[in-house]
Image (cartoon, rainbow, N blue to C red; front, side, top):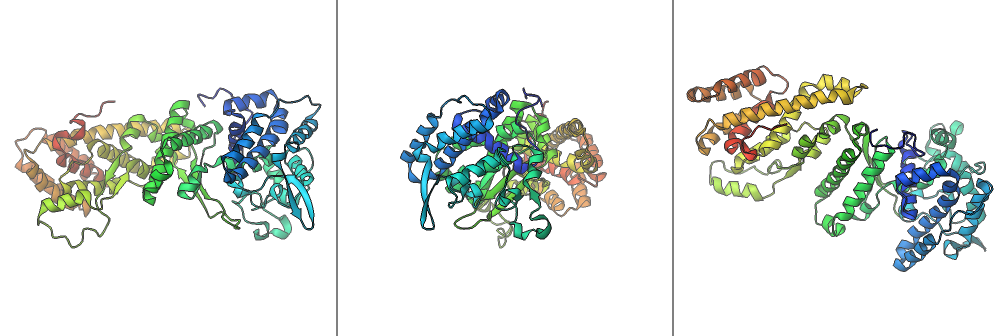
Length: 554
């Protein structure tokens, strides 16, 4: 991947998203506690892996978990933990990794703020002050956090996860809901008497030798800032660590830039909240692609949304995997296309809102009402990424423009129609290319075709717009054309248009328009509606539209 300095990084993704989430969470933990970004962390691991995993990690992890507990107790308590973190000493002299961990554990237990006493039956036990709180809520029932486990048992579990001793606890060996809330409990596995679970710790270790450590850190991969405002957490995931890290980091930055985020989001409808987060996610993805020049990393992108357990519940309330398709993503890598599609479109009222309105009466009143009363908008970029053909949305936008006497969004509409048409026309070729190794070389041809189709649509939309002397003449033709298109009546659409051309036979450039109609509407069974709608948009747009009538220049 261009932009990657380390060809063989110390940390790299495995292709298993759960372990990869743990790796990302590990990176986030070390950055939050010690201020090391991914690049610096990779260097430190290469310099001395033992120092990272047996000194800095156990100390940093314990401090971070305790800090999450203290958040509910106010700033003063948080500052106390921050002061402990600031005083974490440099690595002492050590003979081996066991010796180093023992010294780290001794430092942890010497800090009274990290230790607590708890009742276990009639006796009192001393333990590390950690439990499933804050961002670690998803680790409910994980052995390390059990309130009845004393400090010695906690130490043994930690050593097992670090690979310093054999794993003896069955709960840690057989992976189920106790370890990952994305799995059922062991008792729910069908072959429980034979396997105890469908995954064991050794399976995860075969993917990455540090997998048991990453089980502890996977909750930190999710952006929890949204939990308070939207009720869920999110994580962007791709198969590449650097790209995933960059996108998630930029997501956090963009969210922090939204002033008074809670107040801002609370003013929005649920639909607009989702669109806001989706838009911010795409800003982050696009920025990271540009920064890393990494088209390869567009493959297999997901946005993972979760609602952690609440109260005494152990199950996740919601898990949603939103795939970001490779074809759409690679098209959006083109700056000009992406910028054009990053547009809000009015599509008029919801279905049924127009019923009962008397057509033809007080048109000005109806037009004004349509502009302000209950109009719905869509974000074209989102619709495109959701793999929906955008033609239907553009048809509604054109209908809104027709009723309101407004210009449809000329450039964005025609670019979207061109994309939609070329994807439809190349559907078979595109589906094969999606599974080929040469996809990211072959997709360029589709992008070039989209640009050519866009230029064709713009030129013909401008030509048809220039045929008419006034807006009234345009409207008289646009209404029957739109009615025929909405009914998918190609014969009626073409006959209406050619009849009008007969009346305008003395006008220039009619031959170009007639050729366009025969080649792209009459002889096209796949996407004729796209080309037809482009002509209606041209008719409704004043002298070439918002781009001044200029054909898009590459």
